[in-house]
Length: 312
Image (cartoon, rainbow, N blue to C red; front, side, top):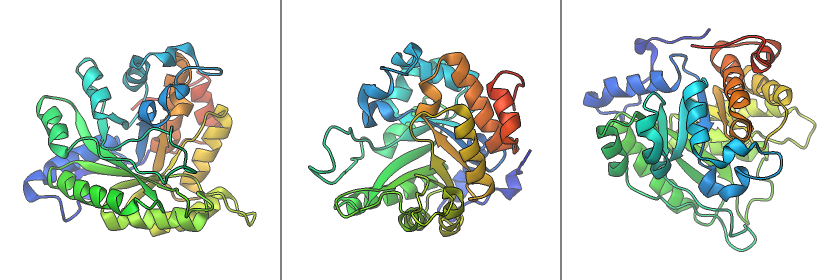
């Protein structure tokens, strides 16, 4: 199982000396001491409204928001990412979870054909720091940028300022960067995905969440991902999980993203929480077995099927 020591954590130069130890502690918490990130994305209640939580093919347990936190408690995750209010409502009952506060969000009601996407910042960092002072286990923040939108400059400016402030206070930052808008003809073009990874590096993010590339030249997606992971430099790249697929397909894609594409983890939401609690917990363990412990797909699938267990 990969592991890193405190001395091996690379601390960015914009982390203030008095916050250095806290940054290292948060990094080790978020990556479970491995340097890799298993991010449980729970921000879709704004992003996709209720259609991700109730309907055909979705376990009825997912209709209740507490399902997310039960998965976070019983499963094996690095961080649970959600909006400040969502975390504030439940964190006192789930203090053991590592939280990453999503700083901006938008719904999907206004289509891209009507207007380019803009995801506004919902609160300032002081509100997050106040939660931390109140005892919430906040280890980082997240922010979404729609690269190619006519509003990208606003989102990049907001993200850049938040990263500087977060690092100064010892918090990690994960950027969600998706090329999207009228100027973008192919959102998963490998060159654009690599470009998004480079933008995250230049803004100073610790990790960047991107969609897996979709090459049109016959190259395997994981092979095409190599260019993006090179472009991201010291910013760790993770791939979004996307819509729910069968466990074997998902775990195989994840294994290839890490071991072929060079990703340093995963960021998964619907593939986890749309399942029953028992199945979702087993999937977090299977995902973490690959992400954090280099399990093979077969061994991770055995974890998902309940034939093996995985814990840290």
